[in-house]
Length: 129
Image 1 (cartoon, rainbow, N blue to C red):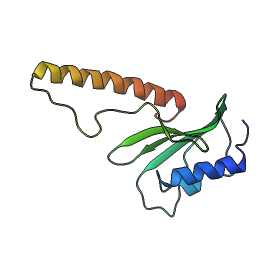
Image 2: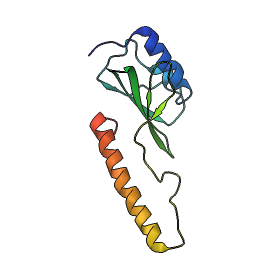
Image 3: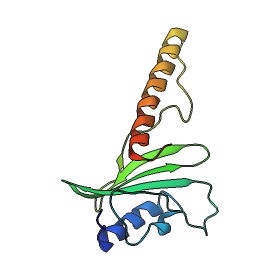
Image 4: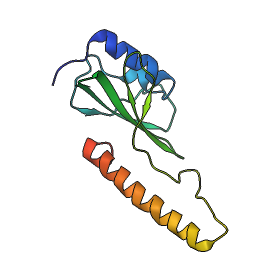
């Protein structure tokens, strides 16, 4: 484990502010390779946040998984780059219904299989139990 440079940590905090009320609770120093659950006790939000900082060939990154009462989101932050969507659950806001019930059933099974794969990715990272 190594520490993320302070300027990179500051960039992550700024980017997280638009995503969660727990951004200010990101630890300093921020270590790579550990799943953290920053929680700002001053926040009344019911959301949870899990983060994993790391470094690869493209530089430093912060993977996050944000969950509230109605949805969940998995993404990646990098300094000075747009947020990157990672594997996410489908069907959080409703399922597609087709004129043919067989098509609707197939779509439902596709979403179930997709979400099982997403759950495994999140478990592997330590974001899901």
